[in-house]
Length: 184
Image 1 (cartoon, one colour):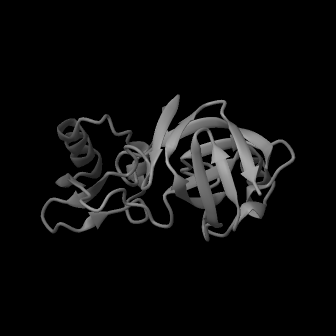
Image 2 (image 1 turned 135 degrees about the horizontal axis):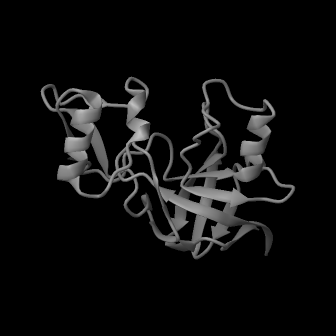
Image 3 (image 1 turned 120 degrees about the horizontal axis):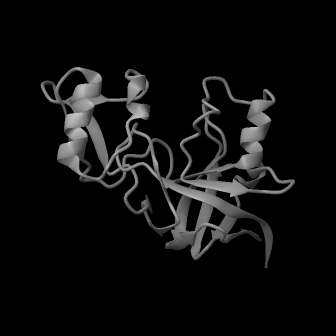
């Protein structure tokens, strides 16, 4: 049994962790999350230390092209120091869970002041932006969703971000406009 609670408004992947995302009409969701999401990290070419948006906010202004050589040149120019892209052998470099879901309604609540401390409501960096008429995704923790062909276990709310985090129970394809079903 399931209830339709909303729909997928847009889908984003962030090929390089901390860089701006790319919007896609559809994506394959596998056990590790959306295919192509956060598969590279920016690292200092001299020290090998990871460069993050927390210490280097200008990263979020760069959109990864998918060409690692071109992206490396752009990042080196923007940051004014030599960096390189490092692929993750362990899969996507996520901080909390495989999929980050945020509703338009959460963004509207944040605009009215209902936003966690340290959160950027301007750029929630969600994989799935949802439209939930009259809904609030924060109530889904501990529940399952079917989004397109994928089934997700909602595991928690972020500490410093909008929306909810979910792990993938059943992989599948998700597309803009797909219904979001809250499962019993």
